Amino acid sequence: TYMELEEMDKAKAAFEKYLELAPNEPNAYDSMGEYYLTTKDYAKSAEYYDRAVALGMEGSKAGAEKARAALKQAGN
Image: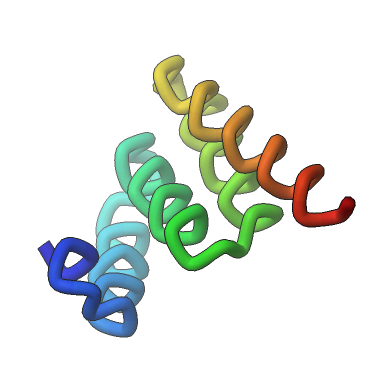
């Protein structure tokens, strides 16, 4: 909800709390990956998406690929 409202500081704080409370929940990492993708920190985005995949959330592979593609494009 905070991201939809473009309240990015609140969104990041909420995701950090989610990770703190549920460190083995893949959706927490997927959410943080989405946050970093939205804020254009593509390296961190890929890192969080990769962690979600490692915890069993196969759907996060698409996010990781999107972040890596954006990172590669930003480097050009």
